[in-house]
Length: 332
Image (spheres, rainbow, N blue to C red):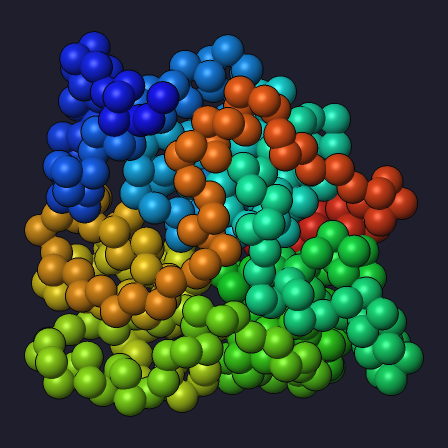
């Protein structure tokens, strides 16, 4: 049965308050296709004792419609460590689901599409890390969370874009190996005296932005405040008014309340923040993450109905990777 066929008057009535909040970012034409799945997912969460974690790049019908916990990679990792439900559904990419499993080894962690990958995670292997250690003996490895559990297991400590500088400086050493995002490494290096030995991976969303894009945005939208993600090239960050993680960008909007703003990051971020601040004019340059967009309401519904795809990790790898993540969570 199609979602539109399931859009009964009873479903429409139950979902009406939610659509009242989301009408600014979801067209009325699309809502009958979303509402039945949202209604079913909310019921299935109760039946399965499940909690849904959604990254800031998920689409509004997921982010605002069904998620219990939302945020950037750091926030999701911290909240995953505190979850009490017996089932976690991770609406994001695969490494995020692995991180949730690392922190909740006894719980069932589901990812609605196991093929939701990440260009950064795929840019480095455990063997690459071992080679770096041999090349730079004694230098600690700081690993961005956008990596597989197997790579985390070869690391000393993890970080996110929101705490990378604090993590690097927490080690108290003159230099570190920073993997895998070369642009994030360069942006971290600009904020610390610690020498950064970088791996040259990149996010396929953020590497497509160039400084010319920022200048064109300012010319087309006078007075716009430009916020960028530190996975963007350093020359893009240099053109911005502020650079930070998705959580930091959201906080900036909440605290500064710019009249017109552009978030130079993945498409759905602006939509999700705009729901909270309808009075702000959001300019939306769009670089889509194809991996994030593999997560959809029908797939989430099916995951809860069938309890698939469950994330499983090699215990030997998981133990070492968990240590690296837990060390990150101890850094404040």
